[in-house]
Length: 92
Length: 433
View: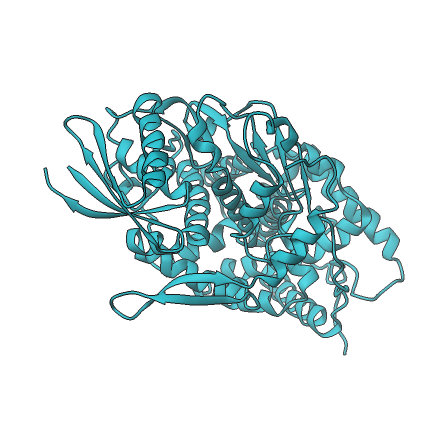
């Protein structure tokens, strides 16, 4: 399990995301429903389609949840979307 | 003041002994014979790009023999192989556009750039302490006219290539000529500063954005997107290092040297200072919003020409940033995934690519999410702080926000220049937000 505190670029705290590594699922706990919905869509896309854009390239084979780089890639993607994901706790 | 003048444009003559009247090039402000010299310079540089390795480096063998040193054939062969490898590394780059772009004006400016870099590399060749030498030249560079700095950003590939070429010839120069050359470069630099002859009045130039109408029906990316993206980019970069951003509805395969199967999402062209974004997968809606991060990544690449490879590596060493790329494995989370997966069978190339892309990712992160960068990689954050202050002394970086240790967290940038650019963008054609 890995927990991230999520803030926007201005530093406003939006909530937290928990990644359940065994189930390969994200659990979203946000203060705002709108923000939670946006984040849900985003993370569902990562889980289903994988992460295709890294750096300034599109990968032919997206990074999917079974790839050890998935979580790091998801973190980076969130920062690309204007979120600040700060690692909070690792417990597995 | 009396001084001797040499000529480096005649490479075949340059290293020979007893030719103290060789002329390196025109003196600033000297008009007599300027056109003839200029033509020679154009020819030498054009020849350089069209000649073979053997034609470029004939002196490797000849000079040593002339100097009367006993050098074995094996030594010469080893040297030639080493140099050939380095040459091929340079040669893999696409210089076709460069070859055709030599105007006379560019040649004059290029010459000054070559002098500058060659002087630096010459000191290194002399065995001086590399980091101190580079640091001194960075300081020197800051004192040079703005126009010089700006122009030195454009043809960095040319300048680094040619300076390498000239340095090769200098390595085999006798001591007298070496001394003269160093003296020359020193005087040349002083004259550039004293006469300020390259200084030009700054003029406002249009910032161009194009092609985004093709995405209009599929996404909300358009002029608003570009405006938002530009807010993160320092004023010094916009309009100088980047003059346009365009979307091209094509796929652009990634260079094989990255060892990654995929297409380029964006690129920076230092020749026309243009950032290009390439065809998007419209089924993947998530990353549309992240497009602005691509702009910042490419902006960082636009800064790359400010550092020649040797300079960059030295700086990285200086700040103890990650330079042992073998340690950048999957579990090394402070390095971006992109940098981690770059692979090349040639470890030198891999290191160089990782260095370039890590720089872009680091600067991009610093511009958009400095707090995150600070928490993930304090060394990179520190590097950016120092680097940006050094590169953009006039940029208004203001720290706002305080963390639990009383340290500043966020950086805001002056709003005024952004507004100026937004005003300029109103002139842009074909943009419908």
